[in-house]
Image (cartoon, rainbow, N blue to C red):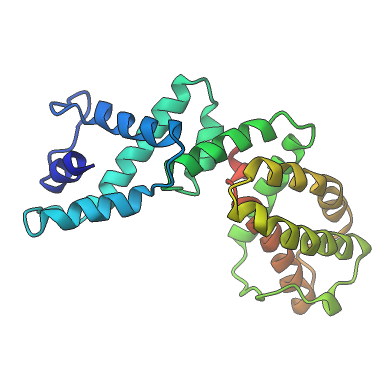
Length: 232
């Protein structure tokens, strides 16, 4: 990490096919050691400490972000070589996990999620939710207000989210991402029912904002692991 921070710190990072200091190989070596030994190390912390030790010698003000982006790029190459789909890698990279062992756990979790019967429908639903939220300029509520829920399908979905949110927090904290996604797969039916029976953009502003908030809470749960809306 010292070598990476030092060379990136003076603007001599690899460009194109040129890598005179073999930084790509060095970065991959660091990642492999951390993942294979399951070390609880964070690239952010490691890079910041390496930069700090150089003092005033470095000229690149963005050195920390540049090194981490470079390392994440090596992850992409590594997992592609291992046979993982590009969309699976992108789904995890979207969360920008900086702990290599944690990144690996997310990759394995999303890869397993893709084998589940519910995965395609939930990936499509997440994409739909993402698009709806992106097009809205409403200021959402901090919470879903149960008193504003009207339709049976939205009440059912809201109830499921409350139960899963409380149940899964320990899973997320422990890095049990595969178990979490298996639990989240149970949302397929209530999510399908919601979109079949509920008009998100209701005329009543309070109802509309509450429904958008509900969808944002759904998306937040999945984003604890990866952005599965990117799965094809």
